[in-house]
Length: 293
Image (cartoon, rainbow, N blue to C red; front, side, top):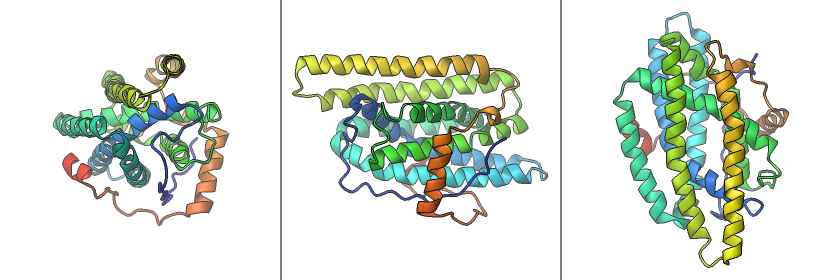
């Protein structure tokens, strides 16, 4: 059983925020900064995929169509907030970020050309992994420096909490339209590979730039912390994917919502309110979104 989706008009202010915002676990900050630069490119792809899916669903799927609109609203807010934060990241690391964004524009044009079944499977694949990020981030919030009140930290906690909230939408859409178990697994594997094949090399470049002038011993300790972070992350994700998400009868509704994520979303409603239910799919009006069309 899942909680109803909510359209929260979250708007965060990143004035004065540093690109190296995470003093508690800088390596976690480097990795999430790299991932953040991908999101304004991936989210228009999701929105376009779900918008097209809505047109293909049979007339009786009114609840799923409503959830698609709310999914798109949430992804649109993630897009706009990460886009603003990415201005900070791009200013600090212009060369690697600009190069990475150019690659993403090319990638998502090519991926969309592969057809809607692939786009839907890719979206479902990402949305299968995203709730695991929510569990991982909230479980390690103190260790990863996510409980500091920093706007960048709040951005990530709010984002992954909403990813957990709308975890069923892409899965149910793919099941309704295509129902191809092996292709769904392929979508999970491809999306996971694509996200990390982009974000891990970029995170390494960001880390190297941020550590210029740092003593050798400090750089070695950072490398050890980064290796431990990746080991912890993948040993958390992989067993879940193999034992649960890859099963033919997998239903993301069975994933329990972390209590801290539920509390944060309740506080977000108190802080930002609730937008009127969208009557049509939300599309972020950016160059990135236009490129995805």
